Length: 64
Image (spheres, rainbow, N blue to C red):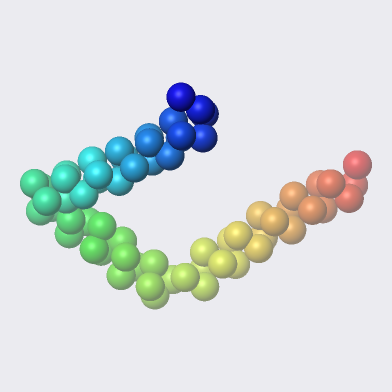
């Protein structure tokens, strides 16, 4: 089995396991629902953090 196929299979299994856990345990589903709501309101904060990390890596590369 190729490494790419193995990686895709692991990702697919992880998604299936996550869906099954959400179906069997309602609290997990509610937790992910709450996380989705928070991400909806704070997407700009994640964007600012991502840009800041990218700038830090670029400054580190330019300094060398």
